[in-house]
Length: 223
Image (tube, rainbow, N blue to C red; front, top):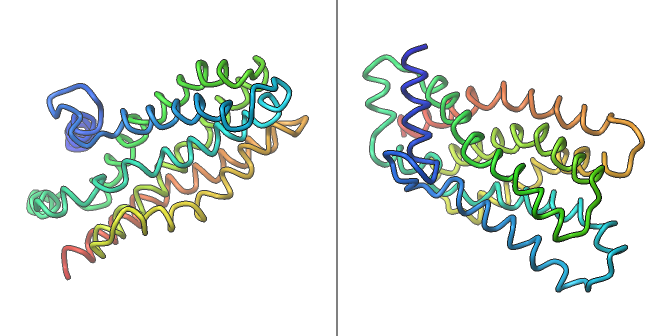
């Protein structure tokens, strides 16, 4: 438990825009800027009609969050793999699965809370009412753990293959589509079934991610 806490603190210091790591991975700033930029530019693309913005704004925020989650993937795992961090952890008896569990928690903490809070100004820019804004925020709260889990798995696989961010995005988007469908679909349903399904998918992915990403890192270290 102490080793996990130390790994989590280290990863947060690298991914957050503040801390001893100086936010060198850009984990929080880039997704947040992208998310808000989409919310600001979308009204210019479709026009200022309040009815159109209110009807489409929730879906736009979901798509913006989905695309913003791709931005930290390029160095989420690959930098530590190249620098031999996982080799050092293995020498200390720390399994790849434990390291990936800490990285998953840090990755979620570094981008998801900022996006959820950014829904407030973004929703105001798009003219969403309080109910729609609350549904988007609840949906992102339920869905972002799954987005973080998919991102971690894809990043670990791509790091082992030495592939680029473009390929990571191509893998990420179809895997994340179910979360988008159920999360954004909750905006047009009278019940909370969509949010529940998005949350269930997220929990399953979060439980699977450390093992899948750990196996990818172990394969990359052995190659």
